[in-house]
Image (cartoon, rainbow, N blue to C red; front, side, top):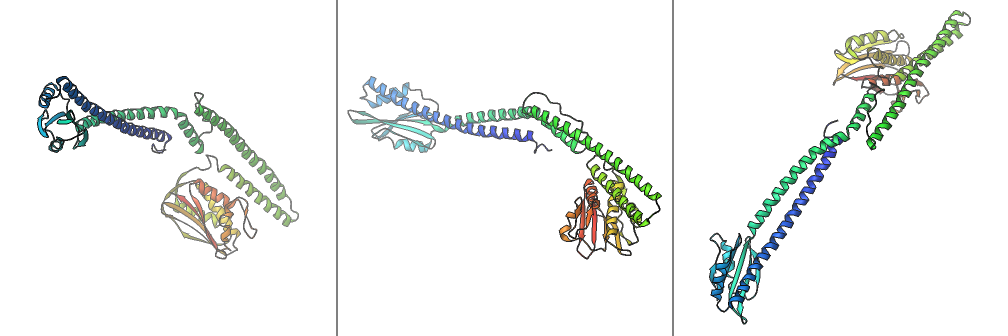
Amino acid sequence: MTIRRSARARIVLSIALLLAFSTVVSTLALRQILLARVDARIEAALAQEVTELRRLAGQTGGDDVQRLFDLFLARDVPDEGEASFTFVNGRPYRSNADLGTSEVLLDRVRGLGTVEDVTRGDVEGFRYLAVPITDDGERRGVFVVTADLDHERAEVAEAVQVAAAIALAMAALVCALAFVAVGRILAPLRALGATARSIESGDDLTRRIDVRGDDEIADLGHRFNAMLDRLERAFALQREFVSDAGHELRTPITIIRGHLELLDREPETLAVVTDELDRMSRFVEDLLTLAKAERPDFLHLGALDLDLLTEELMAKASALAPRDWTLEHTGAGLLTGDRQRLTQAVMNLAHNAVQHTSDGDRIALGSELRGGEARIWVADSGPGVPIADHERIFERHARSADGDGAGLGLAIVRTIAQAHGGRIELDSEPGAGARFTIVIPL
């Protein structure tokens, strides 16, 4: 299992995504909150300047606007990014703005020298507040105070960047710690998976999971161990049954055959009984083969020379019955397989071909290496297999549409092919013979 597909990685990835989402949302929220506070602070600072000017006007009487502005500008200590402008009779009077003030702002401020009411607004990154100074309803001057929004917002952006960097660093640290913590939490599940894979490969049915704790995973481990106990007992009983059944069935068949051979009466009856005993003996062997197919020692793999194996198979098959045996092709190369089981499978195919042909009919056998696979086939010139029966004849005790019993031979062939990681292929049409091919990956 790769890291990308593991539960541990998915959990940590989910945590990382949640942390990233919360970081983005919290950073955006923090930015909006800080910007709102900056706006409120700027508004309060501008209003404070106007309040101080009006207080000073109340102390001095406010008759001389020029003197009022002179006193205010002399006493005023502007905040960073803040500037004040004064107008008398619509003309600029004095200001504490530095030379770096925006020309666009200065143009806008000059247009505020004749306002009749309190005016506020934003222009090119600055906020301004213009207040007319009146006496007995007569406007005598205008006071304009400005604040640098860009400067304040730059500080907010810097603070947000620092907060985001800290949040991302914490998210990375949390993900690293979560990776370790989740790994410890999921350790029993990994042990469960390793045990299951070991059992699947047939290595050891006695392995158990070391369960600790009393949480849901520990309960799963206890239940899995209990299931393994039952499986081990079931497999043990199955092996004992197969062994006992094979022994108990073989012994009476051997005894009956021995006594029949001693009799010399009615040779035709004896031939029929002997033939049935032979068929029963093959049936017992086939049952034992299928029962052993799930056992880990079913195959004894080794390197096989395909051309030598093909020649041996041809020699054994041609002795089954008088047919026109033909070696169509011999593949050259090595494959990994069980010589005895592959021979058993091909002999079953050859025996099946003999049953569906007559003396002198053609039966071909061959092999080849193609596309990373070894292919061994047996082809006959018999009646063929109906298309509807192509899959069914490989089932145990299956019968074809015409009632012909397929027995266990073809089921064993498919079992042996699948045990090698391969398959069995059938190419046949009614009246055109049949070709059975065992395909084994190299």
